[in-house]
Length: 120
Image (cartoon, rainbow, N blue to C red; front, top):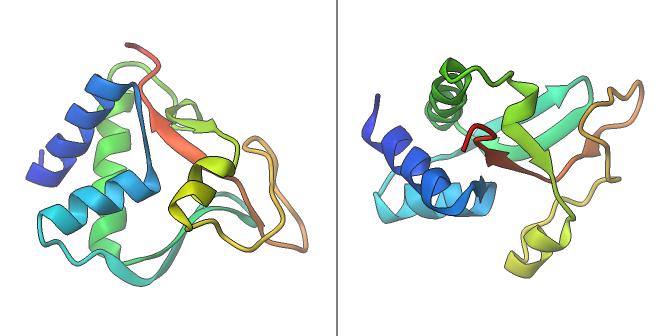
């Protein structure tokens, strides 16, 4: 397990969840360059976060894989939240709000989520 993955998992264990702004804060505090041109989708046209590089996405995947080892499905690693959580940081995404369990045909939607460990 990478150091950053471990930090994120420890945060989740202490706080029950972590949002993408808090993950980015962990990256920044550890001088990790996470910004890039890749977006993260949970389903077709259902965006959950944007502008990360491949290495940052791989760390998120490592976090999810570690949670899944505990018997949690990938979709259950995410909890949809009100976008106000991201508005507080001034970092919401200017797209129509989607729903976690849906796919969208023609228009990209943003589904504000946090990463959770439902086995806690």
